[in-house]
Length: 243
Image (cartoon, rainbow, N blue to C red):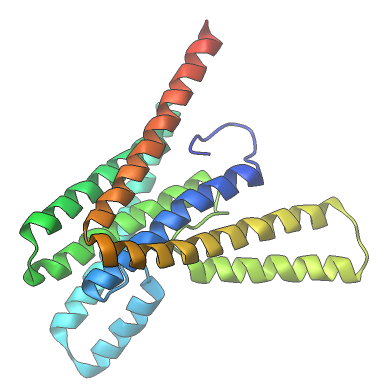
């Protein structure tokens, strides 16, 4: 699910991707809410709040919200540039490597908060999380060709509505075409992403309540493990093919 192949990706691969990455995004979002009272991946809400702060002329909050948006975009741009470079050089495990580094960054951030926590640093930590969420979302979007956006639930809900409408329209026309089958599979992929993010949010709040910032380290560790296993399996498969 973490390897970009020449063949068309299956919906099963995308659903597995959604279950892992959307759940992780939901957990991180909920941990940030519990720790800082803020969503690092909720860019629609942050943009709306930025508009509100502009009208109130609160320059400190305007700067903070604008920085979060900029950090998220920078994360997406960074992931895209790394992917372009990796694929151009024939690096089949580039997506795994991105998630591996993201996991390490989350572990490092968690350790910093556990040992050096200060409310004065909260905004800086949220900005870093915003950057990592941009990396996270960009990675899943590129890997799935836009079918899985692990943090962008507003867009996923819209896509799910479109897929559902297409399925209903085909059923009303009694059109058992391949297009109907494809729309059904796409709908399930979107629903998997949505419910994975929702379940991740519930788990994240519970984890933070009982474990504090250790919960963030656990998410980072999980990403490192999943990425490492994918890299090991891919390298082993390549060696078997070469021999």
